[in-house]
Structure formats: structure tokens, C-alpha cells
Length: 156
Image (cartoon, rainbow, N blue to C red):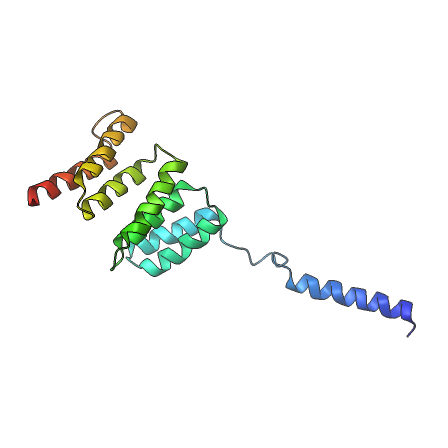
């Protein structure tokens, strides 16, 4: 085999090796979309499978770091797991609210986190924001947080 022929064969081999190793070449295999990751995370949250939810949400946050829904659900997951991590929950709720100051879910959930942190006055601030965002006191996020605050105050 002459050197020219060898280089052609070597080049073809390298191209095949690269093609096999390159993600996305197999049309039957693709990475889950953000919406699919969020759906899987919500399913895990509903089943209280916090580790699985956290895994999906952390990948989603790496892929879409400016998605308020991802950060809101990460905050929720940190708050609801067996050993709540309120600092991490607050971090993600605050990120969600920076990205979308009118995110009703983040206002409701950060308010509930403030109740866990024994700061009902901070929760009340988010209730006021929800009333402004909703334009009334009857949206689900407002009524849920209002009930949580009332329950908290009744126990004190």
C-alpha cells in the first residue's frame, strides 16, 4: 500500500470512528427536551421521588439556566424532600423570581418556605404580590398561600 492510499484509508477510518462517537447520529436516540424533563420531574414530584426530580431538574437547569419554571421546581424539590434545604430552596425561588417577577408559583412557594423558616411577614409580602399579579384574591396560588399563612398564624 502506498502512502497516498494509506492516508485515504486512514482518513476514512477516522471519519467512521468520529461518526460513531458523535451524539445525534442515531435518529432513534435523542436527548429529552426541556418539556420532557419538566414532565418527568413533575411526575417524580407527584410520587415524592425527590432524587429523581432533582436529577431531571439539575440537567434542565444546566441546559436552560434562564428558565423560571425549572428554578421554581428546584426550589420546591429542595423544600419538600425529607431533609429540606431551605437555603437552596430560597436560592432557586429567588432566581425564578429574578427571571420572571410575575411567576405565581414561585411567589406561592417562596411564601410557604418563609413560613417554614418562621418568617410569616415575608410570606405576607408574597401574598400581596400575588394579589397584584392575579388582580384578585381568587387565583389558586393566592388562595393556597393565604390558607397556609392563616394555618401558620392559627398555630401560633
